[in-house]
Image (cartoon, rainbow, N blue to C red; front, side, top):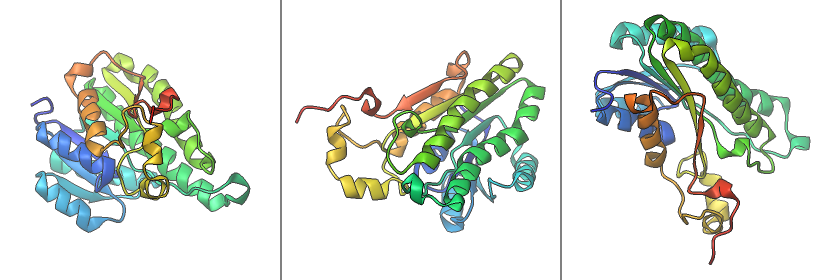
Length: 248
């Protein structure tokens, strides 16, 4: 097993991509801390099914994050892997976008990533080992109308990933990002339900991705197999970002 006895944190871990990553990590032998904000039942059921533990935390609050990380360290051990997956969307055309919609997306997606990295980076540097994986999106570079806030948050995560990777590389800590395309999750349900099969026309592989597609890449980035990879944003989108329109 590639992650045997490693301690991993997965934020936004109760469902969707986070759930898929937590399950995949556990299958590879990791001890997984499932961090959630409001989905307590789902998080606890998942944690029980993978012999992990669920932890409630508001990722936008640095003090709460630091407390959460200390609790995880006390109960599971020092952190080897961090997956920053917690994220929200509040789509609207920019002229109608309220400050609250902007702030909640930036503070959750980007701020949450910063907060957990802030709490984890120094301990990883001290032990000269660690894997940080940030979940970004193809929306960072292939933008959609009504997503100025979301695109800004994910674009910033990409730049943050590269900059942090440079700072931590000499201490044996790698920092990478995964940029999913359309994945079957609750977050993408509205778009998928509205667009239907039309989406598949723009995906060369002609299918919507599933959380397992992202989880497999996360396992690789968390393992020793990726030891010489850092500062990279790996796109997992079935070819969507290539810009081709698949033949009917």
